[in-house]
Image (cartoon, rainbow, N blue to C red; front, top):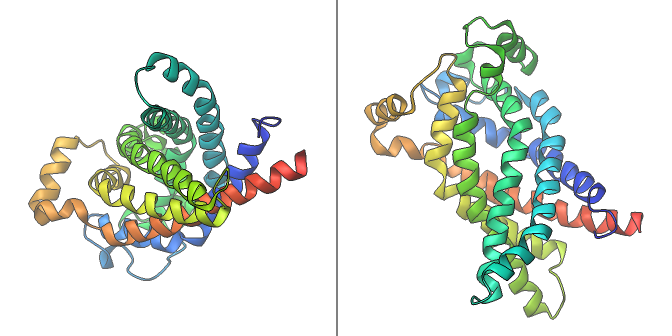
Length: 281
């Protein structure tokens, strides 16, 4: 890792992101349709579960690569700075804070790629938006029929996505790193194995997913809307439709998808990182 600080996270992150998004795409479609206005069956039901997969393929590798490139770089840079700033504290909280900040910067970087592909993907997934494919959804945004502007259209929900992803990643990655360390200590090794990393990713992802579902519901509604919508208005609309339980629509598939997806995503990342290090060194 030290000899190839850019190439390894780029390759490993790209492989992890693409494999996870392709494998779990139908569950993501299920979650999107449950959260969309009108509910599951009005937005396509069980048909076309891979609608929008083209945008996921295009965005998965660069988004995940950008995340891990930023995350690994920030971890290396931040820890000595924070350690010197908080000398009175033990190293464990400093490690946790480092992972929180590094993962947050990683998500901000990744969302510059992820949000446009997410907008296109979700508009293709939900039948209520009249688009049948990723290309049709992209053309709809680029044609600017709604008058929102191409940039605003592609980055619709960017701030809400950041609002969701930063709390998510601040829960997921410190928990993931702490669990990996615990596994390594119990195994008497310097680091956790890829299988142990996958188990840690599953636990951390599931906990983070469940906690941040209300933010995900808001993000989905904003992205599916072709007109600008005020968050307070959207909150009132969701409460009016379903009560406060509306903020937890899709929690089961989201938690399942991200829990199992976290195992695949981080397990593939750790495996690919080890193989890439071996091949490049």
